[in-house]
Amino acid sequence: MSESVSPVDNGVNVGALLDAREALTAAPQAAQFKWRASCNWVGGTHSQSKVESFFGLGEEQQHRTTFSFEADHPEIFASADQGATPVEIVLVGLASCLTAGVAAVAQRREIQLRSVRATVEADMDIQGILGIDSDVRNGFGGIKITYQIDADASKEDIDAIVAQSAKRSAVYDIITNPTNVSIEVA
Amino acid sequence: MTSSALKEQPVVAGAVDVVVIGAGHCGLAVSRCLTERSIEHVILERGQVANSWRHERWDSLRLLTPNWQSRLPGYGYQGSDPDGFMTMKEVVEFIDGYAEFISAPIHGDTTVTSVSRDEDGYRVETDRGEWRCRSVVVASGENNRTKVPPLSEAIPDSIKTFTAHSYRNPDSLPEGGALVVGASATGLQIADEIHRSGRPVTIAVGEHVRMPRTYRGKDIQWWLDGAGVLDQAIEDVDDIVRARRVPSPQLIGTPERATLDLNVLTDNGVETVGRLAAVNDGKAQFSGSLRNHCQMADLKLTRLLNTIDEWAEESGAASDADPPERFEPTRVPESPRLSLDLHSGQIRSLFWATGFRPDYSWLNVPVLDRKGHIRHDAGVADSPGMYVIGLTFLRRRKSSFIHGAEDDARDLTEHLAGYLAGCSRPSAVSS
Image (cartoon, rainbow over all chains, first blue to last red; front, side, top):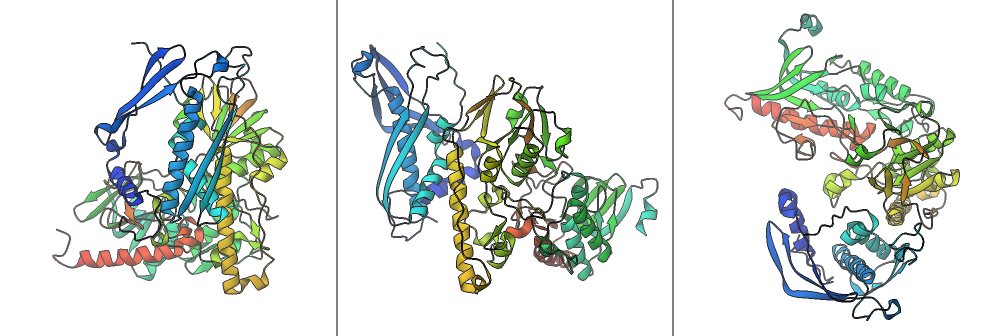
């Protein structure tokens, strides 16, 4: 599979992904991952989060470097705007997950991508988080993602790539389906 | 006949080359092929011929394939309505007629309780004695049990739940709203029927396969048959594991040859929501993925119609057909409902159209994978001399169809004959 001589190159090693899928089908325990982040309060609504390690393939894994993320709220919330708001970081997670999937699916389907751009917009009625109206939820009312994709493929094929990417996307699943969350104070 | 030896539940009912488990269309097709090769065999059947078709279907169900397509080795539909769809009673008559036509060696009312390996073959224990054989063909079907998700445990007791095996018709439902979980052929047919009974229906829709009943003036099965889609072999499929998991297409067999898809349900007033993702504190939570699932189904339908149109041109079938058509995309509500309070009284009954699974609880041969399915290569099970037939996409796309039994039965009995020939040779494989 990985010997493909296809001239299409989106920079995704589909052969390796398919090999991994085969290996993990035979050894499902190695497919058990844990993803982690740590978050430190800086001051006000400003926090800094770090991502460095995760668990997978049966052992601890390290990113090549520690990644850090600033989060804050904008000035109209009387905050210092030292970083993106956490809800925007959620949108970043969704768009980047789907976009990675677009590249992988296109590679698998041997479609050369020239450019991929996603814009994400989410509606929120902040009467929820402000506790003004208990009928309004805290989170998004809805999320709209618009892709502009330039590729050697028909409109239908491109639509199918995006739809397939959503089908296999972790963040899309996390956002569209409920997840149990436990919060403890150690 | 052997039946006289069955009095008093003797320890050994008989020894035979092949035991076929199940007298449905697949078991009978295998029997016919074995008879053609003069291979000695019996069919063990827990009830009567076509037992699942008799007892495990809802009242209004008809085949999803037109009558002309119902055929078994050496036998075809003889009636006057080739384009119609058999009721379950007619299916039973058809299969019964076949059993008689081939004089199948059926031992009815004989439930297999265990199949295990034995030094030179298999030991098949039943509630009417034990059989020894060199080869076993598992033709017991793949829809023996309904599959219900673990979250079903969180459904409040006040809601009456049904499955394709417990439901017969809407009369047994309480008055009030119904939630149908699943959008395969089963889910859509039940949602439509319950809605017509005057109960408000909500249908939870995950991955599904959209298909019109007729296309360009002909039945969709005519096109799939002609274009070779149904004959597609597992070698020609990119990912057979995925292909075997695809839900049944949204089809219904009616005298009107009507299409039943989500747009039809929406027009009739059924509410569509996303996949049932969780039940928390008595609240059903639906996935926000409805639009994506519908779009995928629409895109796949277009690809299928493109395939059909190409074949229609190449083969000349187009000259005798209506012009190509494309169907309106599935209409999805602007903001589909994401939750439903199951304690509110709005929902009184719930139907799990979440699939089926085979029952191999009697199979004491280590051939099951971690999901409980028989490990097999195109029907040749991972245990010498054992075969399985009648599973989705076993060897071909049509494998789970009545007319799909013939080719699979021929291929597998050919393999089986080779196996028997191999082990009957002295000092060959057996020790």
